[in-house]
Image (tube, rainbow, N blue to C red; front, side):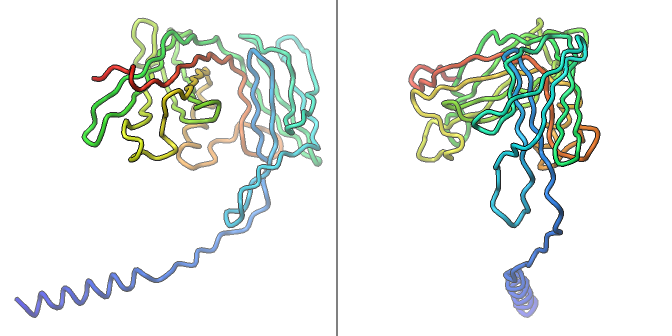
Amino acid sequence: MRIIYCLCIAVATMLLTACKKELDIKYKDIEPITVIEGHLTQYGAGVRLTMTTPMDEPMDETPLTDAVVTLTDLTTGHSEILTLNEQGDYISTAAGITGHRYELNVRRDGNSYIAGCEMPAPAEIVDIAFNWIKMPYDHVAVLQVTFSDPTPSVTGYYWVRLYRNGEAYKWNLVTDLYAAGGLINDVFMTSRKDLDEEDEADALRDGDVVSATVTPVSREMYDYLEAISSDSNGPSLFTGSFCLGYFLAAPVAETSIVFQPDRIPEY
């Protein structure tokens, strides 16, 4: 038995030693791909163009500013060329209209990228609240966002985003499959009570303002965002020349809450 035990230890030691070898991973070089991030809300439109960055290089988010970006209301036939602002975004102040279908056309360097989207009915946020939930390791502040389901007769898809003091914080994808009484509840695990043990990406401090937005999206956009959350490029939402990204025409509901840990109830 002792000999067998010693042999096992020797084999285990060799295996552990073998695991220390550094892997030289070779990435396949591909040409940079155009990325389009476009939105139209009740407040206007914004489109940003960038290029993908090779995996072995630092992220480059420099916007492309040499395109012609056109937004067309296919319901009315009205077309507008978006203007470039100082931040490198192509913008318009014309509000999107529920039930109208829109087409985004981006032309650059001999290529044309086209995407269409119909603007759905808006959701309405009716409540937002924090609760402390006891977990095995600590109390955690759980934020519940409650909003109305504007299309109860058909399956609805929603993009719920949180911002911490104006900066992107967390986001979820939600459907109305579990709606009750025409309302949908979405829950976020946020900050631990013991901030010394909390990751900075999740930490909330007294006085932080947490804003929530709810945006109804199409099934195609839902699938795209779901793929993005799994580190995939997702399905192509543009026709014409190949590119990555999305165009979303949708109204945005928004509300905010101040994080006050001493006033949050415990459950």
